[in-house]
Image (cartoon, rainbow, N blue to C red):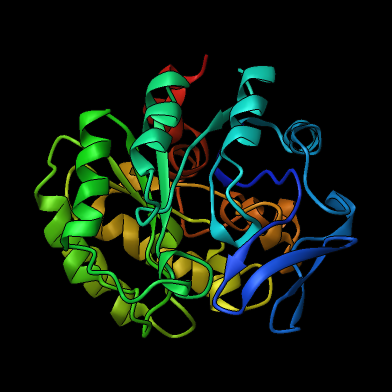
Length: 304
């Protein structure tokens, strides 16, 4: 089955930042925080100090993926220009998103360069307190003035807005505030990453959040859903969460994403989609909508 992966990452070299300080590369996909904590950021098969566009292209070929969207995140360092350059080199295979820290003093110059000079059409804001905006800043109100500057900028530039609000129970996880903010931008498309990141045994939380965020201009990607539930393949709880999302909001709101390459520490790339493709929970049409058709409708015209 043909697929579009709406949530991947490219990494020129690991240069991230998180709640434990700066993240530096060690080789073989491993990295170390300033705190001394070492992690396997991505499987060594995908790179040593980073993950190239050519590696992603090979993965696409092996798994019948038409194109992927390269998002930004603090966990590996902002890779705005690297992802943009990849989208120029492989215009039919990679679509890039930009990002910035709204606390940057010269953010207006960054905005102009990314979204006016380079004409990047998507923005990804990660606000999680692990490796997002609230990892190295105080708690930010998602319906407050700092974030509304970002929303308004995106609205004026007609950007598709990806947002990762972290996990339930953390100060970044502000579903109600996000819902209130979204109401103010009815003409802007929002994509909430990780289906709001429900963890194991959180069906009630998921259903409540989906009801709050059920707007016609809001979509959800499924990246790292199996990782968050921490179940073995074929990820039955993740399947149940997707089924609930379809029943609450309709099939057209769901977009498949892998969270390549770091999510592949938990499952293989094939498992990241085959748990949907081989599931008995979804009809053939629903599978095609999730894995391909919905993303093609939203992003197909943006490819260069």
